[in-house]
Length: 287
Picture 1 (cartoon, one colour):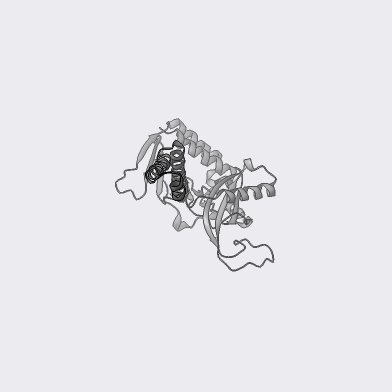
Picture 2 (cartoon, rainbow, N blue to C red):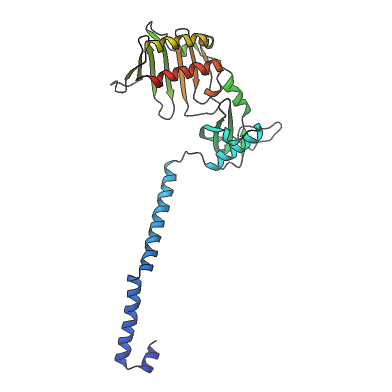
């Protein structure tokens, strides 16, 4: 540049022209709307990308979509039903003790290596299925033994039975577990009061008192008799093996106690499901 300027311009003219060219370059770089827009867009993209990564990191225990999709596709194929008829009702992270995800096939040799993955429970509203998967969903296995166990009740040990109801109490529900691990007790009295408290709440700050009509209470009592609620006395319907963060419900009438959880609810006997539905209806209509 300097050689060319010296050839065609005097020294002062060359210096002036050089200054003008440099000023023009700086002006374009600092004032061009196109460049400013590109810089701003780049900054915004980086910020949005960082926010998305942060959002994903907030929920480290969320089931990855590829895992859920792999489970639903496998079950739909096995049962010959549509994927839209299935719903994932529970999942939690697991570390399986072998390469077979703890669900070996007959005569299958399993590598003795820890495999991080997921336990996934799927329901069609009538039946539940339990799956073991790896982290990515490239390996999914149906745990048929776990599915069978949700249908078979076990006897509640006497030492674990709650105390019987007082004379004025029609029904009681104790819910415990879940992510919070808190325990709540809800009782229905003959006069229609529905009282809910949190066990261990020293200040009784979470107590709520609502009401239903005495007629609704009497209808509910008759429904329990018709559904033969007493035939489930002291029975428990356990969650699938390896499940976590589920809520256990202990229901007690004047005739007895039954226990189930939110995972196996759809696998309960129809009469018991009807009784649970009637009780939930009481809770919904109370004011």
